[in-house]
Length: 292
Ligand SMILES: [Zn+2]
Image (cartoon, rainbow, N blue to C red; front, side, top):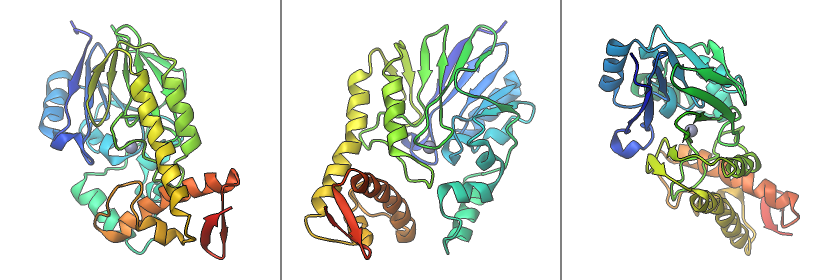
């Protein structure tokens, strides 16, 4: 007889990338969510329980990398992220690095260090879909922005929500991939505010949070506005994208390897610059950004 318990599996190394917090749902359909840390624990669950459903909230490797342990399970994800789960080349495109000279290094790190294994999504899930696991019913919420197919999960009977990378960390929202979208991310945070859950799980940061998180969601979203205002301030002197990136406004400090920092910081800064250009606050002439 399954207990129906939702078991929180804390990520190793502070649940920092490429680790993250996972869930195991001990139900008639034994289910794991975002299996990306403590491989021996996940292998033990597979041995003892025989997992039948794996849910990947999105394609990032810190949510997917041990899905391949569960060989008898269906794999659920949103159709917009499924192609990157199924192909490293597609993932490179969606990350936005398929034309980078360091692509081969990224590819070998993904496969050799981070256990990326291409898997077919056999259970595509869309916003509002509900799947019964036995005691629990999981409702899928499509909350894009971080990635196009990003999902959060509402376990209805326990009134608990797995927020994945709407992770409420002080760092704030991350939108460093080609198809990440700031406006969609903000809309997704607003939508989470309409849910009155009792328990919240995040893939990084605190992991388990009880009660009202409205203030924390507001603080998380406010990081985006803060970054944007600092980027706008930096344009008091005209400067190139590379010049702004060098200030590390999003990450706070540069990290290695420098090419990858430049790409991910640059992608996020570029999305802010596009918003500032759209709202008439900044413009770019011959590669130099300035206040409008
Ligand atoms: Zn992610």
